[in-house]
Image 1 (cartoon, rainbow, N blue to C red):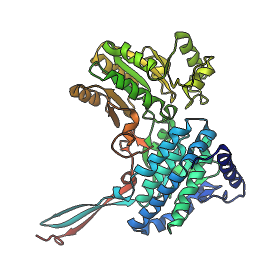
Image 2 (image 1 turned 180 degrees about the vertical axis):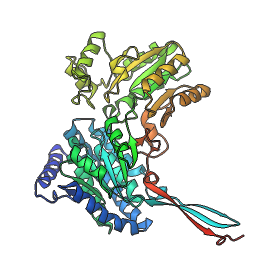
Image 3 (image 1 turned 45 degrees about the vertical axis):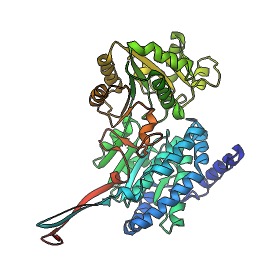
Image 4 (image 1 turned 120 degrees about the horizontal axis):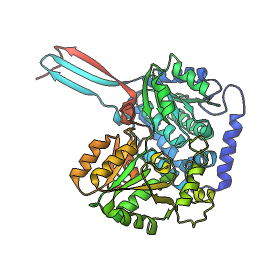
Length: 463
């Protein structure tokens, strides 16, 4: 059932009212005023979760899936209203994807060897209480997806979310705990603090009861986690290039690239951030992008105004521009366009600031390459060694292989939109914590477990 704006505002108002109720909890499950208290409560819950069977954990996860579907529109509207980023339609799709495709306990597998000298098992056990830092770009999606995987592995989690998305995050954490209680599980399987700060993050990272840290965000927060002295999973920045060569279906490439770039106003970290096109098809590609895919061709003057708008005087991103639509961004620089304009494009050198920097906006610069080898070299430079994501449109398998080896990214999408990598129009599972820097790649339940070996010597081998 579609919700009205007044209903959404009522839900947001209820969340805010509960956040102001008292000193110990905010009237919401799993929310505390103090990080130490949040960790202690999560530890109590983890002792129960650890003893639960896989079937019991899966029952909680099943109820979480149902609740996410029921509240997908609410989450989407809350996220857009609170952060000002993205768009409601795409955020609904992301939440449905999380509900339907996030791996649960089926991802927790036991490996066994048997031979003349007995039987050995390798089982996946929990870390305990996981400390997680989450972004404002995909706040509820990250919290919901990660908690499902962490719970499947027998863990509980304490979040230090981005302050810009605290209301949406608290709503998600409350939903997770309600699902657990409905399934007969404990409260506080996911916890947070009412007012997350750098100090609360520091407490979490240093706390003796947090053995594993998971950071989803920019390079600064990932570096802090990896400098903590604890086991860390770091999902950092990317600047994914999309290469198009002369063997590609150019019209389809234009459609896929623009669809991927504009999905949720370019907030997904895997989204196409720039294009490298070989000279032979570059003009054709831009023609399709502008004439058929709703791209606005920015003049040099408009490009210069955009640079001054999307970056502040210190050269950092203007947060008021991140995740905004092409129409809004163009209006900021004095250009009015119709509603069907969904992306801003132009041709420029790879060093252009709107190309070289990861913007998380539907601005798609196109770099012309003289041939495929030149295109690969420029794409490698543009990816900046993040080893995060890259995309290619080509029908030449040898070239696809060469590109994959050169970029060496956690994700490579071939002949499709970027979001196909997350199971949306492609095979596989979704995640919003893509740990390229620490090597786990797309995280899932198995990522949040420890491998433990159990050996029975000279027994239980029946041959």
